[in-house]
Amino acid sequence: MAEAKAKAKKNIFSKMLSFFRACIGELKKITWPTLGTTTKNFGIVVLVILIAGLFIFALDLGLYELLGLVMNTGSSAIS
Image (cartoon, rainbow, N blue to C red; front, side, top):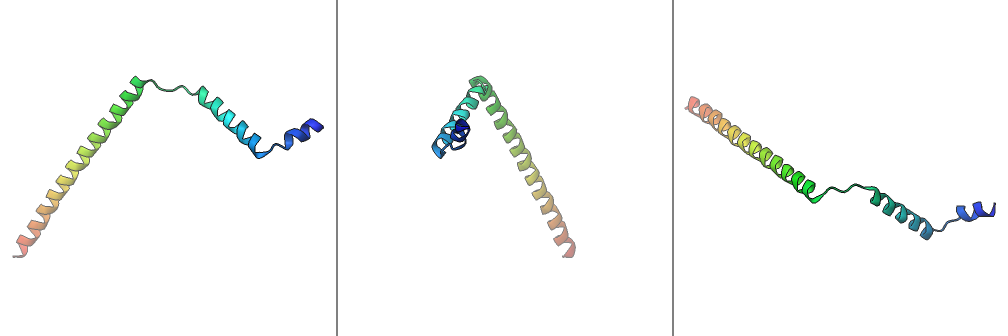
């Protein structure tokens, strides 16, 4: 019974210490990627961002030109 009381009354510092020990234990279980894998994934992300950016840029230009055609047609029909 005395052991149960002693375990139940942990102070904040011992709780923090056990928390950080558990965190370190969990970090050791992680399988970290290699430098080659990280570089490859970084390249893929940059490529996808560039392709999406070019697509949005082309779509913006196309829609801007289409709007210009619609606006010019509307104003010339009135005059």
